[in-house]
Amino acid sequence: MFSDFLRRLIAPAPTPLSDPDARLALGALLVRLARADGDYAAEEIAHIDQALVARYGLSDEDAVALRKDCEALEAEAPDTVRFTRAIKDAVAHDHRIAVVEAMWSVVMADGVRDEEEDSNMRMISSLLGVSDQDSNAARLRVTRR
Image (cartoon, helix red, strand yellow):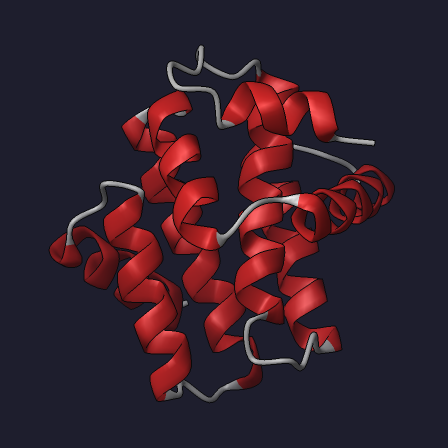
């Protein structure tokens, strides 16, 4: 279903993504993070939906539909390193910082922050070109809400 999109995303010189494609790619990254521990929990799904509503001004129904597309894309996407680097090359830095903040909200959804999640956050943030300081600031914004 997403093979053409993925081919364009991981091309040697990807073009900037259109807004709908960026939504899919960044949402799929949230899904990938939530699935990383093997427990794709209802709290994480709810936080992904909330992030999509807040980030893109979607209705709840549209956010659920987008998340379902993101789940399908994530299942077809290449390894995290290639996928994340492709997003970095195709998505503006400000949007990537906002995604790191949404990622932290997914990580913190169950109230537990484990080593695996921290490791994934460090790797993904770095691959997105977001500094540790910016990632930490994003985490603090999420935990202070």
